[in-house]
Image (cartoon, rainbow, N blue to C red; front, side):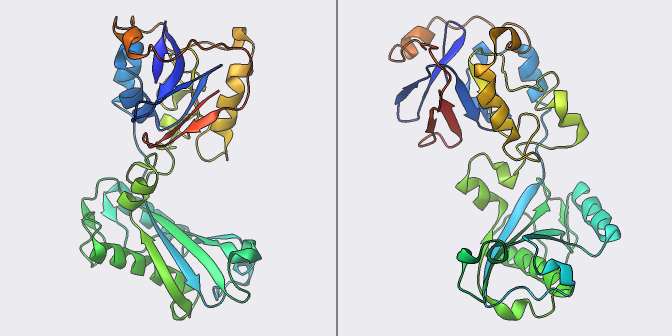
Length: 312
C-alpha cells in the first residue's frame, strides 16, 4: 500500500508497478497480511498492532473434489435434491468432532459439508453423473491424531490420502455405495489451499475465527467493526472485517459502499497514526495524488502480490 500525507493513494505490486486510487483502496486480504505486511507499521497506531498479536485464525480446511458416475445414494431421501448436505450422525457426533479439534487432534470421524454441484446445476457434468466436493476442518496446529493413521500435519501424499479416505468413509456410512461410483478425486490439503489463494492461511477460509470474541465490534480486533482502517482512504474488504464470511459478500459490500458515504460517516479507527517516514515520498513519487472525483468501480490487483486489493 502506498500512503502519502497520511492517506492511502494507491498500491504497488511486487514487480514495482504502481496503481493509482482515485477514491479509495479496498483491501481484500486477511487483516494480519494487511497490517503486518502490506501497510508500513509507521502508518498504524501501536494499539492496533498490539491487538493484532492476539488475532486468532479459524480452523484449517481439508477439501476433496470428486467426479462421480451417478448421484450420491443418500439413505435420507431429503438429501438427494439438496445443493449442500451436512454429514454427521447427530449432535453427539458433532460435539465429539468439535472437542477433538479443540484439543488439537485430527478428527477420526470428520464432520463434512458436501456440495452436490450437478444436482444444483445440471451443466456441471454429463447427465446421470455428479460433480461433488466436501470439506472438513482440522486444527491449525496439530498435536495428535484421534484416528489410527498417525496424521501429523505434514500433509504428504500418505496423510492426504488417509484424511480423504476418512471423509469418504463418513459419506459412505450415510450413502452406502458412494465409493463405488468414484471416477476420480482431487485432494486439497490446508497448504494446497493456501497455495491456491494466499488469503486462506493454512486453509483458514474465514480470515479469522468467527467465535464471539472476534465478531461484531471485535472483528478483526476490538474497536474495528467497520470497513474503515486507521489509514484514511484504505478499507478492509475481506472476511476479516464484519460480518465475516458467514454473510455472503457482506464485508466486501460494506467496504465498497463506505467510500461513497458522507464524510461525516467516515472516520479512521484507533485515532491518528504515527507520522510517516521522510522517505515515503521518495518511495511513492511515481504514484499520483488521488483525485477523489467519483466513487466507481476499480481494478483488482492480484498478480505478484497474492491477496487482492482494488484501487477505486
